[in-house]
Length: 231
Image (cartoon, rainbow, N blue to C red):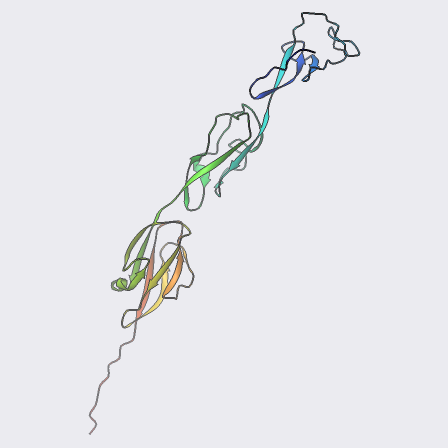
């Protein structure tokens, strides 16, 4: 088909040219090269026989592109591609279904949405990234006995709360021994880990929730000394 410019259509490529709108009888390929033995159009050598005034119909195929899901360290409780559009080759214009918000989890974070959310596949490769906000938690410092809270020196002076802590934060906890008491250990009411819970100063790794860290003491044994004037 000499002298014919290839038509254009966003998101599609011409697959070939056909004798009718239903695109079942192919007359020429996408480059316009005539097919051989097309009844009423070409001969055995692919030469045009129909004469002038023929109407040919372009058959369009949607362009394939790559869809990539980036959960940015999180995960979906849905199996890959179940309940949402699977990553991989997706044709232009295909409707994109997203994982439900409730299925998205990442330890220490709350899912807030997607970096982009087109309803259909664009005419280009597409990466959709999950967006997260870091959860804030309260760390409460305490002592046992409770009246020894003043001996806590880090991460705050004395017993009380420390706000805006996050999952995985490495927090230095330090205490001094009150008079007549011996420090025994650090404990946490709701998870987290200590590098060495028996050290007066150690590192506590914040769990994925609020918690109370307690410095525990035992009272030293008290003895009474009695002087006797023997003789």
